[in-house]
Amino acid sequence: MIRVENLCKSLHGKTVLNDISFEVASNEFIAIIGMSGSGKSVLLKHLAGLMQADSGTIRFEGKKLNDMTTRELETLRSRMGFVFQNGALFDSMTVFDNVAFPLKERGGIGRTEILERVQGVLDQVGLSDMGHKYPSEISGGMAKRTALARALICEPDYLLFDEPTTGLDPIIRKSMLKLFKTTQARLKSTGIIVSHDIPEVFDIVHKVALLYQGSFLVFDKPEALLKSKDPIVRQFIRGDIDGPIRYN
Ligand SMILES: Nc1ncnc2c1ncn2[C@@H]1O[C@H](COP(=O)(O)OP(=O)(O)O)[C@@H](O)[C@H]1O
Ligand SMILES: [Mg+2]
Image (cartoon, rainbow, N blue to C red):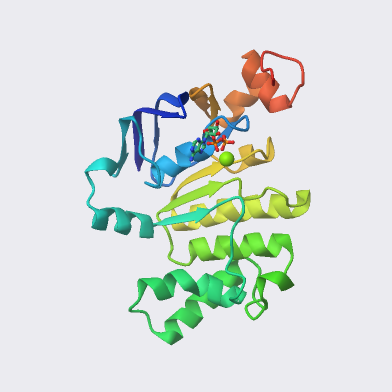
């Protein structure tokens, strides 16, 4: 379970996160939507302990991130699976070795078990026969699925996806979203996905947050956002050019 209270962060004198508070229960999957540059990635980086807040607190299972020792933070991170926009695979390693990497890093796991677990995860993401390929030999969708497999190999309790489907065609995108959902449900993970896949992403999450001017303008069930009469929410969901949101 993740609880964020009064989180504030300024970067280069600009307020990016302005007093954000929210909670994500265990086994709950939420989406964060919002304009480019609104602070979605910055927020995820705070949750991953990769960026420090100016003020406010982030708690995992009741324990403050700031009070954790380096070791506790490492343990927490090892329970997180990340998929970032540019899923950065190791080019010199096969798909199999990319996925095996976190397991090997963790250490203390035998070759046979590594082999079985990697193959199991590759099967789940539909890459059963691709283990021997190098990143340059596979499609963009397969590379994303490899990045997902790598995030899943340690069966994370927390799933953090930052625009994991960007650049994929609509069909692969939909199948990836479905895969995120089934994975989150199977692992009963606490999941957060930053996405521009509106409205498709609404079908796989319990709640949606719209990050706007540094805080959550709404944080509610997908149906509530779809029915919202708030002109900003409506404009954002429908992608209208005209409305209260203006790009300079
Ligand atoms: N490491 C950083 N240093 C300085 N400014 C940053 C850094 N990361 C992000 N920003 C700024 O913070 C704002 C939010 O960025 P970001 O979270 O990446 O937006 P989003 O993911 O919603 O598109 C932007 O104005 C961006 O320029
Ligand atoms: Mg981003």
